Image (cartoon, rainbow, N blue to C red; front, side):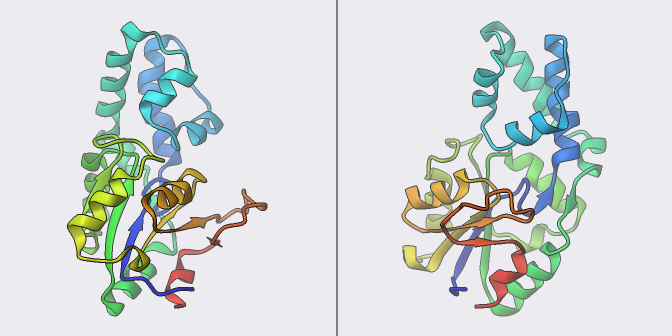
Length: 207
């Protein structure tokens, strides 16, 4: 594995298992429309922006603001945050990066406020130097969150930077930013993917 200086990492499904929480969160919005979604549907929507979710689900235009507000409030609910857990490889990875002097940021489609709440809940916020949110800049695969992270976290060449995520749009976002992308595929959901792929984050320490 190549050794990088700056590691930008996705949040949902990469660092933290957020799916149980997101079922609850999404349904705070979908109940306004008269129905609830399944765990499988939540696992699909977590990889696209809220705007794209509204398009996919044909949320009426007049309901979208109320829908988004309900989801935003639910994200910060203590029960929703309590349902979120770091994957087993995350804390050893962060400790390993700390010993190696690596710089780490989060680039996510989630909101920075929610991500920060979760990091503080688990007392892991001190490992990360920045949180860059596609919901507040532009959603992935637009590369702006990565470009902003690279600009703010240090004077690195693109060859020194990498983005790691669990969705196929994550390495695409990295490509759009001109940097390497690594797919974390813990359950071999993308067996035909031809790019850089790992099934455990600790592989990043093997440089």
